[in-house]
Image 1 (tube, one colour):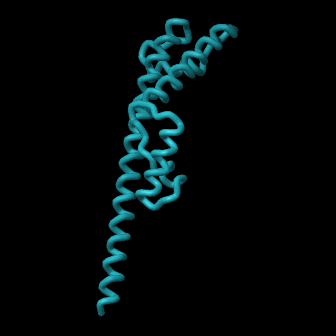
Image 2 (image 1 turned 180 degrees about the vertical axis):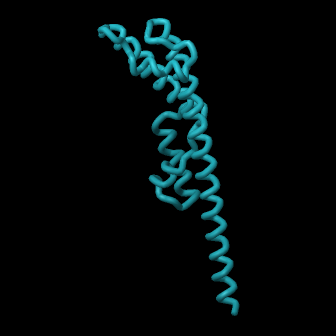
Image 3 (image 1 turned 90 degrees about the vertical axis):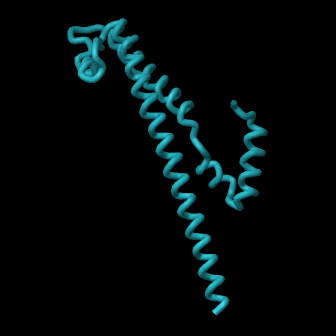
Length: 135
């Protein structure tokens, strides 16, 4: 569910107050939705391959798409043709989705792990300071 800009601003402000961090830091460390990022990257990758194939077909020439045709080594059945542009769109969309999903999942995991590390270090420092004052 998408939040409207005012709701998003309130959400960031509330998170900033809760954590004591500046709003810019809260935005940088915000959770990325792996599904949404994967779909977005998949669509962009698919459209890029499909558009590149169609542009090469429209331009024509003696050796159409020799370089782009190398994608057939990775995308089984792909050729520089109109059917190939559809197949290329599907293959590139799947590859883009997998890359986007994996990237955002890994980024969320690493940010979460880093925040746990920072919190534990801060707790350790507070405990150390407390023990130093007691002695």
